[in-house]
Amino acid sequence: MTNGNYAALHLKPTNGNNYYRIKQIDANGKFTYSSIQMVKLADNFLISIYPNPATDIVNIVGWNNVKQMQLYDVSGQKVNEWLLAQPTINVNGYSKGVYVLKVELKTGKWIEQN
Image (cartoon, rainbow, N blue to C red; front, top):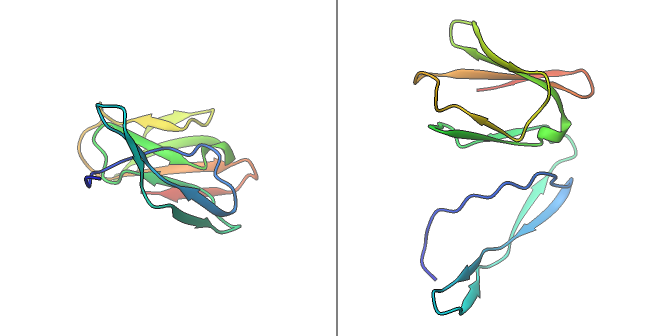
């Protein structure tokens, strides 16, 4: 098995232990599995964004806990907002820089991620 960079989005991870592995399929149809990796999410897990920094797409893990989202630049100007949560944001059209994603959870609580 060769080393590489892989990305996947688990839209509805559960609290506690989540298990993942990669199935690599060769051109000849043979396949192998990576070792199993466990990711433990605490009960207070809210959201996580990746990759950071990003050039094209930002993935939002836990988006199903979010009511709405707002994106701000470093000067505090709102550059975009989404009244419905979504699992990804296309950041390709934004200038390079630091941005803050503010989200309102379905519980009414606001949190920020940059």
